[in-house]
Amino acid sequence: MIRILLVFLLVSLSIVVAPAQSVYQPSAENLAARKAFQDDKFGLFIHWGVYSLLADGEWIMNQRQIPAKDYEKLPTFFNPVDFNAKEWVSMAKNAGMKYITITSKHHDGFAMYDSKVSDYDIVDRTPYKKDVLKMLADECQAQGIKLFFYHSHLDWHHPDYYPRGRTGQKTGRPESGDFEKYLTYMDTQLTELLTNYGPIAGIWFDGWWDQSADDAGHVGKTAPANKNGIDWKLDRTYSLIHKLQPAALIGNNHHVAPFPGEDFQMFEKDLPGSKSTGFNEAQTIGQLPLETCETMNGSWGFNIKDNRYKSTKDLVHYLVKAAGHNANFLLNVGPMPNGKVQPEFVKSLAEIGQWMQKNGETIYGTRGGPVEARNWGVTTAKGNKVYVHILDWADRQLTLPALPGKVSAARLFADKSPVKITQSAEGVVLTMAAPPAADMLDTIIELDMAPATAKK
Ligand code: FHN
Image (cartoon, rainbow, N blue to C red; front, side, top):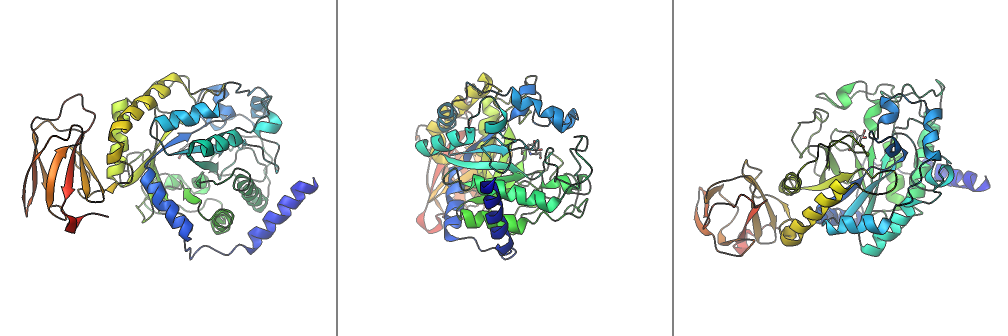
């Protein structure tokens, strides 16, 4: 009890004195971490929680309007005895991924780590009694994989998450609560996550849109109004995080333009600039490092019925297109309640890993461009190299617009066989010995740019 009061006191003090972030100046470590993040290009997203027991995705509590007191039965039989951190981290690493982003707490409010400010967590409420985030953090450090924590702003369980947002209306909680107390609770849990698990690469926030007036937060032209006029006090939370771990990158999946204090910008189920999902109409592309997150089937959390699996070809194309849009690719798995990742995902990740083994050089450390995305594919660049990723083209010849500099040589990346270059002020015509092979996921032409115009 004394310890919780002490933590509370310490956090309240650090919160109260935390300077506003409106004029956010990222630290040198933060800027270095942003560059490394952009070089990493590929990460594993993990949506895992007690909801996996019901095998129907992570929104099951809201979709089936399960009252909080009933939902609390789930932890009592959540016992992932087959969870193996080494296996998960190796699976990510072998897929060519450089970081993992895992749900520390999703919308159901259940903490997948040993929280001291709440017993609604995996150590205190399950027969498993072990801190899976601690095990994963240790293994990530051992294997040199960075670890991000996804953390939900909205909470369908906490009594002080009041006024309720657009979701979690039927949870049976009293129609009362103190939002300020909830925010302090959230910041206390963030302090635990950024204090007890070693260096954390960043925090991936979600759920801010729960308090937006209408679907504007998801659908609409302007930044969403605030349903209940609540103040998320993001300044305070962001400066707390930057104080605890200056190199930690903050991203917030609010589907609108970045707020001061954020260090990267994510796009959910869309490449930056595309608006196919309908909930990011108001999302403009900022100046921050970019990341696109996507599912391997149609679900984030484990869903036993969901067999809308994307092919390995689709997933490699998504990764390459993301890189061509100057964005990282965060690919999701929703582990099963026993702690295993379903075989369909394991197989695809291994196949992506084989592709990255051979072609990773044309992705890692690159930036998007110089030629913007085209219907035939994208380009990535690094140093004096430009990689032309031909994803969908049937001819031997491909015409590029004028490039910022002279192409001194070109070759197929796969076998280094030469590619003929014809260049003029209008553009560059690349002539391959043969059309792209149908079984090639990505026919890559490597261009050497003459030093003057080398892209940094
Ligand atoms: O509601 C969440 C959803 O469960 C999942 O976490 C995705 C991941 O990007 N984000 C929200 C939907 O926008």
